[in-house]
Structure formats: structure tokens, C-alpha cells
Length: 271
Ligand SMILES: Cc1cc2nc3c(=O)[nH]c(=O)nc-3n(C[C@H](O)[C@H](O)[C@H](O)COP(=O)(O)OP(=O)(O)OC[C@H]3O[C@@H](n4cnc5c(N)ncnc54)[C@H](O)[C@@H]3O)c2cc1C
Image (cartoon, rainbow, N blue to C red; front, side, top):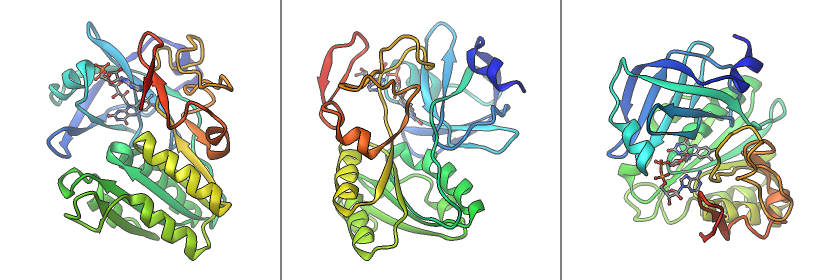
């Protein structure tokens, strides 16, 4: 498939081959197309007559694309109601992706549905002989995602934290990151999850002198750098184009990251 055509063309209608219900609010769709997505990139999913929204890719194995999403608002709740055999529109892939060096020791920190795109990263990085600490966090054990899949990956050590202590460490997953950074030998830290978690990760990594790369979410419309809706203060970097994977250094310098974002009409909303 011609990737450039796919990126800037009309959405392509694809079939949902399989659906897995991960928990009460989260489903994974297996779409019958590969867009050659790199781990960390996103696609725009279109429901005709409803809306089009960005979703990270949870896996692309060269023949199918997986998306894992939370039934959150008007579009994702409609998406949640679809059945196997139904069609959705897809365009992309868009944005930056995660990179590493062969043999790196990586810490992947995931909160909520962030476990899905981080699973894609782990899958790719182990092919480059990376050793991985995969830190997953959620409010309680029922909301933890992808644990069974992560446990099956070679060279990956799983760490779990829950706010209520129903599984793993009682507290935030960033406490586990803190211990891993103190133990040393961490080449890079990657994170995807709630922005307050990501902000803490940027701060911890900066104190430890370790590079961090973070998946940033902003309200976005076009997905390929034209509309300007997702620009970050003050640098103006577009989250859809210069992101969504952005360096911790860039984010630490932003007065916006970890403090506010903008809603669909561009009004500031405190996090
Ligand atoms: C790069 C990227 C990757 C994403 N990956 C995933 C994913 O893998 N899985 C997943 O479940 N979700 C993901 N999201 C979030 C997903 O796009 C939103 O949950 C979705 O847009 C909500 O749409 P909705 O119509 O259901 O909600 P709406 O009814 O439009 O909104 C519900 C509420 O969420 C706010 N909101 C909506 N979209 C955003 C946004 N992008 N940033 C901040 N606030 C927003 C609205 O202002 C409103 O308050 C990603 C977002 C981005 C930008």
C-alpha cells in the first residue's frame, strides 16, 4: 500500500474482523488493514455521520491494525456499540514514533489505555534485544489492561501499581519508575497515560538525568498539521505532527504541559 497516499487521502473504509472486550469500558478492534504504522503513531477513525477521532495504534503486524479505546464521549461510545463485520473509516498513520538503540534498557510506563500503544513499543523493541521494564498502573485491578499479553513477552519484566492496592504496589506507577531510576541502568523512559502521570515522569527523569519520550494527547481535527488546533504553548509544536511522541525536555519547557489543554473551540481547560 502507498503510505503517502494513505496519509493524505480520504479515509479508507475497513472491516472490524474481531472485537475483544478488555473491561467494562474498553474494547480492542482488529481492523483488516495494515498501514505500516510505527509504534507510537496514531490513526484517525471515522464513523460516518458521527465524528472522526484520533486513536493510538495498539499493534500493526503487517496484515491488521489493532486499536484499543475507552468509551469516553459521543464518538467513542458509538464506536463501542459496533459489531464484528461492521466497517469504520481509517486514515493515517500520523505523527512521530518511539525510537531506541539496540540493547537499550527501556522503562515503559502506562496508565489506563496507554498500556495498548506501549505494548506495541515493547513488541518492537524486544526485536532489537532491548530489556524492558513495563510499568502498568490503574485505579484498581479490573481496569488494568493487557497484563496477560505483556507477561508473555520475552525480556519484559512487568510491574503493576493500583491506586487502591487491589493488585501490585498500592499507589502510583511513578513510584515504581522512581525505584527503577534509582537502581540505574535505564537508557530511556517512554510513557503513555494521563497527563498528570506523564508530567511526574518528565520531572523524575529530568532529576535522574535520563531521557524521556512521552505520548501527548490534545484535541485535534485534521491530524496532519494543517488546522493548528493541537499546537502546544509556547513553542507552537503541533502534537499531531511534531508529536504525539515528544521529548521530555520539550515538554518540561512548556507552560501548558501538565497544567491545561484546549477544548474543541480552543478555550483553555485546566487539567
Ligand atoms: C494522539 C492521540 C491518541 C489517542 N489514543 C487513544 C487511544 O488509543 N485510545 C483511546 O481510548 N483514546 C485515545 N485518544 C483520545 C481519544 O481521541 C478521545 O478519547 C476521543 O477523542 C474522545 O472522543 P469522543 O467523541 O468519544 O468524546 P467527546 O464527546 O468529543 O469528548 C469528551 C470529553 O473529552 C474531551 N476530549 C475529546 N478529545 C480530546 C482530546 N484529544 N484531548 C483532550 N480532551 C479531549 C472533550 O473536550 C470532552 O470534555 C487519543 C487522542 C490523541 C490526540
